[in-house]
Length: 370
Image: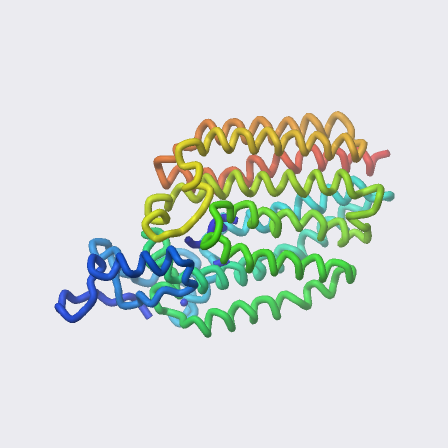
């Protein structure tokens, strides 16, 4: 996930701050607020403090999809990140990978129309799932977000949406998404419930551990189990368990890698705010860490193919494709430039994700032809 406050949620405009002696200034207030955040306070009462008085105040967007909304709707569109599709890729690509994998291990190859229909159903669901996760994350992280330059204008942080309104909006998105699950086999619902709980837990982890990205990897990777169940199979059956768990673990490592690199955008502000994460823990050795994680990811993909009995096409397309594209991106990204980390995050879903899909799609095509 992309990292959503402090990866990867997861709505009144901010008024200029005065210099009246009776008003707490950032310089006066920051030490006590830092102490609270270090103790893991969920919400820090700093709504009247501008931590970035030298930067422009918030104004509604005048271009893009958000500019088409009524002004009162804009904060909710921002909570859903409808103007930032990169995070949606983080949610949706594991489901596309899971669909193709499930098609490859199915006793009888499902039709292409079946797979396209499942992908079509899961796209709007993932828009809502991502929106709910981002809204929850923005709510619990509002105190942190006010201290992070990139996140300071998020809707809850700037006061455009109250804590209660954001919680209601989170639940509303889940409620709207629930009927979509009714279109799928019954076992899909408990799998999705686990994923939702894990997304909510992740938002709290950056207060207690330097490894929240590991937690984030689990709900994203849970898409693999979900998609196997969506094609009426048991992901944990004796025939499916080993390769499915290997692919699940490979997706966790992928998430840990890209979200750690993504988090380098905010590493300086995160350190000041008391936010924990792997970008801080490994700030001087992130590329080495990413390389090690990628070796593990590729090895797990190879094990998945071996245990599933996949052909050479899978090993060339998926294993080789992921190895090559991840190696390139780890080499290419400039961790000292936030824009490079952000671009890397968005682009790698299409390039690395295509590597994931290439071998699985070829494997499925061979199964259909046979």
